[in-house]
Length: 106
Image (cartoon, rainbow, N blue to C red; front, side):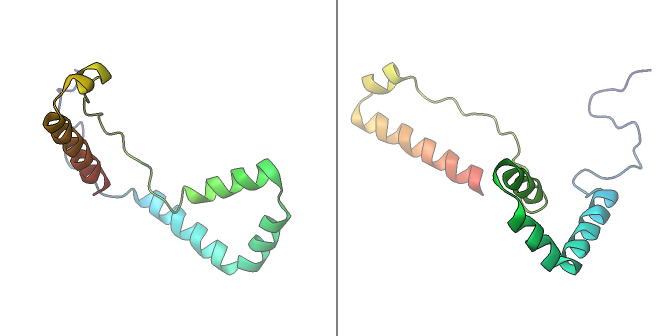
């Protein structure tokens, strides 16, 4: 029997937005390990060169920065439409774009 849209297969499961406990434990383990081995890690990082350094650096950043979420693009006027607008209409369109960018950052 297939699931219905919007209906969970396990209603008593993890609530939407709650962190995965295993991932949190892994992050905490990695954090503790790095803190306990900070000097060795820094020395090893200094010895890495080029692509190896960049790839290691980027992989570590995944634990610090949140992954960006996909946001739908707001439709913006085509160039021809924008050019044919009055200065006032252009100003309004630009302000709408600025406002949508501000909202995305918050």
